[in-house]
Amino acid sequence: MGRARGARRKGETTGMHAALSLRLFGPVTLTDAQGRPHRLRGKCARILGVLGMRAGSAVHKDELADAVWDGAPPTSYRQTLDSDVCVLRRRAGLGTGRVSVLATVRGGYELDPGRLEVDAVTRRDLVERVVDATSATALDVGHPLVRTSGDILFENEPFWDWGRVVREGWESALSDALLHISRSALVCGEPSLALTAAAASLGLAPDSESATVHLMRAQWWSGRHNDALRTYVTLQDRLVRELGEIPQRETQDLYLALLRDHDRLPSADAAEDHVRLLLTLLRRTLDQTRTPQDGAGGPDTGTEAEPARASM
Image (cartoon, rainbow, N blue to C red; front, side, top):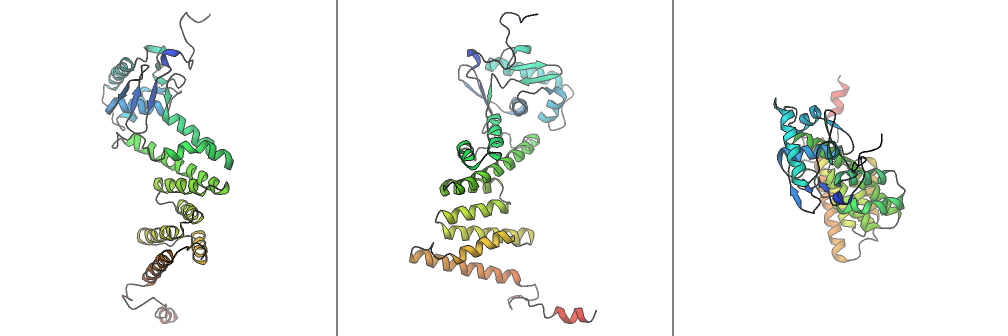
């Protein structure tokens, strides 16, 4: 049998729905066919958040309710979901039933990405393309990711557990993509972009030593020699204070290369700043080698431990 007159295939775009979009970065916002934005909060924001991240796939009501209510949906969650979906359809002119942009499917709902643009889907596709791309292609594709790296997924739902987990997963994937962009920019001779991408990556993953190394390298190649040393100092302090560890060998090797590079000190002020940084590093290194018994007496040489081992 042929399609009924006026019916549309799934994913088929029409002029009526050309302006529809769903923004999940920043405040969750649904823009209707007339270009009017509808900022959403609470259940409606969460419903579209889940369906938007799964656009093109059916989401069962049980799964949707579990996500929206963080594992504790009310007894009447099916009726509540049906009511909220009707409200969303009506407010944004999404149509009704199975032909809606927010369609009813067996046991659940599905957003049609062919008739509604979802920013999270677009950015996720860009991340996947960047990770698998050559250096030149990564730069061509990756500029929008660098430019929007500070946007927060589900920004107006900070206490939503499901949203937090998805946000953390997104930020981890984006951080990795930004590192690839930073590496690619250095290879292609664009240290300024490398610096911006590495800083954005580290901002998303502050515990990443790999991101720190890339930021140091980008700062060095951008002529910001002392900034690279400061980045090392910050990393070393954090590792010692929080983990009781020291930077990895690769990071230390880069730091030593920075110390050997005297050509990056173009002025007397920069050289003086450099000396201050070195003194700071020296003091902190000495502090880290002291034991509680040493106090202010200097670094531990280990001589007191030798008799103890000999008497065992």
